[in-house]
Length: 354
Image (cartoon, rainbow, N blue to C red; front, side, top):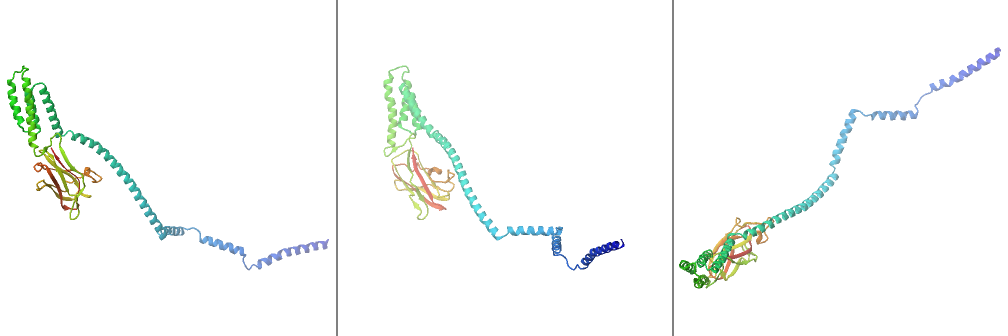
């Protein structure tokens, strides 16, 4: 029993010795760290260096803003933007030109409608001018005169004939004959039918007197009447400028018929503006040369908003030449440039007589 206890005690001590002996050896022999620990510690320390702080955030934001500015000022980007801006400007100009052309077309169309409307009104108004009214009055007088003759009212017919001759500008012996017949007319019995055959020659006598006056006036020439004015016109384009810049600036008119009145009118303008000065001369068949009018910027007035291309685009300049047109023959109208930035383009020249 005692031996048994001794053995158990021995084994227990041996076992305990075996357990404590290696532990004591490990603790005493640690001389280096594991490699994994070193790597982990290094990663931790690096992470601690990169940890976010207010100072580092401010520095990062400053670098961010600087980088943006530098990127926008880069030469490559500047060149690309300049190229795109040039292309944009070119496209904008094309678009503006296209729309401006359309706008101008719309304006021109609107003005054309107004011009058509008022041209009709102008034409209608021209037909109602004083000359037309006067001519209509003369025609009405003639109708009334014939009616009174048919009614054997010779006194009234002669009074109407006198009025008609006065309106026509005729102071013929027929007027005197009319007055004489008018004075004798009341002496005839008002209710008698017999005077009718005697009175019939009286009216033709008055009319023939008026005709004789016409023949007297037109012995060397044939006279135009107010009812049918004569117009001698020339639409050949001419140029009156300085030096060699002169072409077709003399217009000839063969006047065969004329009346008591005559007017010269012409339509002209500069090449682009109305800055032009000059004089207009009339050469009579006898060779005499008379200055009858002139032109200047104040007189050259365009009527077309889009420019002058013909006689209809400019107002005519008119002057009275009644005292110079007093015989038939060849008349010449000459345009002489005097001053200004532009020559005169002549589109239409005419002589009207009645």
